[in-house]
Amino acid sequence: MSKIVVLGGSGFIGTHVCEKIVEDRQPGSVSILVPTRRLGHARHLLPLPGLDTEQADVFDAPQLERLLAGADVVVNLVGILQGRPADFQRVHVGLPERLVRACRQTGVRRVVHISALGAAADAPSHYLRSKAAGETALRTEPGLQLTVLRPSVVFGEGDRFLTVFAGLQRRFPVLPLAAAGARFQPVWVEDLARAVVCCIDEPWRAGQVYECVGPRSYTLAELVRLAGQWTGHERRILPLPAALGRLQALLLEALPGEPLMSRDNLASMQVDNIASGRLPALEALGIVPAALEAVAPRYLADPGLGRRVYVLRATARRG
Image 1 (cartoon, rainbow, N blue to C red):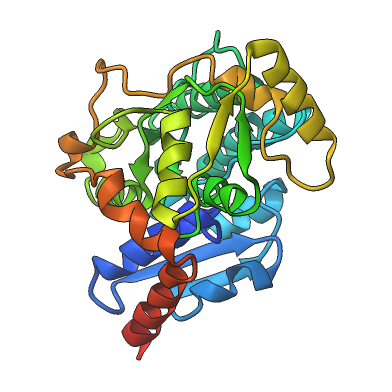
Image 2 (cartoon, rainbow, N blue to C red):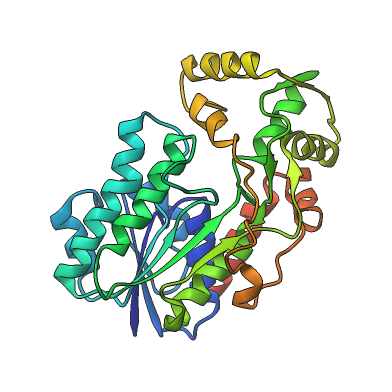
């Protein structure tokens, strides 16, 4: 039995990754461990056979080493989109640094790491620069078999992208939009999860960086408009000039809770979030990426559909 530790496994992407790992294997052939700050956050994973959750702080070095003991592969999905510079440094750089040391101590040699399209040391945002620094930290360990996946924005049941914009159009008659011309190449979460599993199963892909994108690119305004159309609540989109966009982001940051957009998000969108064409993509992993139009209308029309289907499928597998 192989042991796979999935850091960030209880989140949106992690849920689909864990499901795909189980789906592609014979019962009893794999053990999956998902550490989580609160066990309740991972309750929805429990129907998956061979999966265990454990309450732990992965930023604590001794706990991380204990979690990795006996593991064959570690998948790192931990990331944030919002926060202060220190938060990005802690999550996107500090954790990979701890992961390198934990792998060295426990003898784990294989890591699959989710980064971000556009990650670069000279990128305009803290988010993208910290993602690049995290990749660099993981490459410092000689002999570590590292595979990096760089997705564009990820869509699918439970996402916080198209679903959010669809919800806003249900409530407001006009949608002021900063960075309306920013370009994205959205990737379906199921395709990204398949890519992770492929990199787990094929160790010879170590050393590679894959750009995980869908078949076509869109402006942000086009994506927002499509989200409205597919829910029957298409609203007028009001593109904001740069100065007003920065003001909108500043005001949204001041609201309680996680902001819909931050100034750092806005800075990230100065770089088109599309494939460079210089690195292998999903097709190199044998995956034909799904079109946004073939997937998104189904779950946007019924926001609860995806989760209900997931629970039924997971329960059926355990039974």
